[in-house]
Length: 130
Image 1 (cartoon, rainbow, N blue to C red):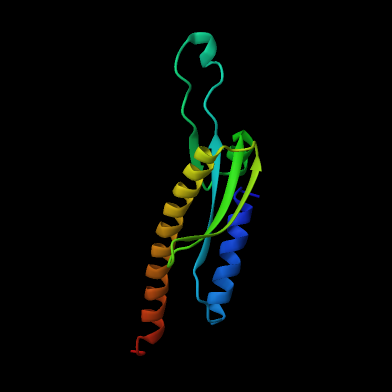
Image 2: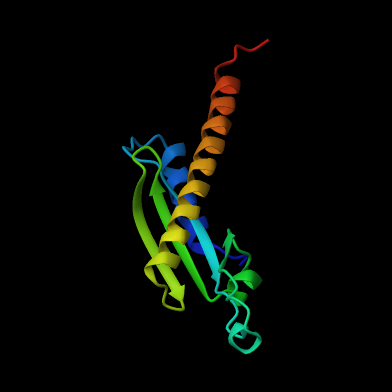
């Protein structure tokens, strides 16, 4: 287990369906976002609270160090959240929204990479033998 197992399983299922030629209306890609909440000892020093830190695709150790982990699936074509599964500390609306926004952007990058990879695969497949 190298972390982000929920996102890995979701992406593996999507890619298996795609590879099998199953017609799909959506590209539901997944990503995990780890959240490390700001330090709580700022009250003692008088400094402002530390901002939350977001970790995309956290490793297993990073997941253990996070206060919460949110795994999301996004339909990139429609810019819609398909699913959200969180574990760890309860998140307020602002923290959850930040996780969803970061995860959505990561899913868009993943989708662009997959499209590029599939295009190269198809070009190689369709290239006439020499």
